[in-house]
Image (cartoon, rainbow, N blue to C red):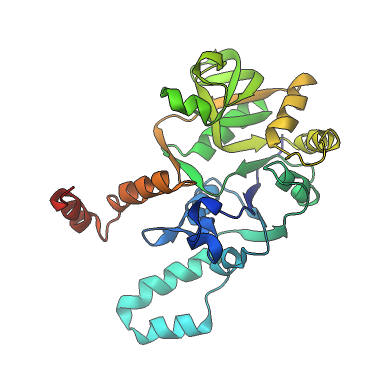
Length: 296
């Protein structure tokens, strides 16, 4: 069984929910205090041993490439002129470029979250890989990717990250996996239903945030593409459903010991900023004091 060394991050969307801010700044680069959202995902990938990170972008996403590139000489010189107090900042910005091998691909094909899979097939080849969104994450211990990789290492098949939901409105937001329970928090998936509503959901496990795919996902993504009608979007779930129909094994793993953060809309983004600000060593004390004193 091959080791998981590569990850794919789709990042070609326009971020229209955050306009006008995203007219010039990709939503993936929106800051959580002093770090862009996408860096949280990259750091988590690197922490589990991912070596190659393929980011599927659009023409308006050069800022992402610049962020993970080496810092400019002008920036380094400016920080050096600031004395010893700026040295940690030099180390921080230089470290970003060396975290992994970064590969950038321009997205081509129909709209939808399945299209990046078509774009990366030649780079991934016959290896298993992580497929993870650029605007949400799960803070967990052990990390969500560590939990997913552990399941893959045991069962050798595709694994969908999942969170347990209870609120009625959440059953209208996400896709849900159903199937036979292998053990607590692990399903042998036989069905995936998009936004089913609470009454029609096959389980309370919403498939979100990040997944491990075996390379046969590419064959079924191509088949899903061939089935697409003009004007339709291509979804990764279309390929998964075809895999299931052909008897390919897919598991859903509930991520334990963590919290799901969805920064893809304004309200959840602001909640994430506030929560992680309260954990930030530089400002958490003063920020907590500010919130307590805030008159609402």
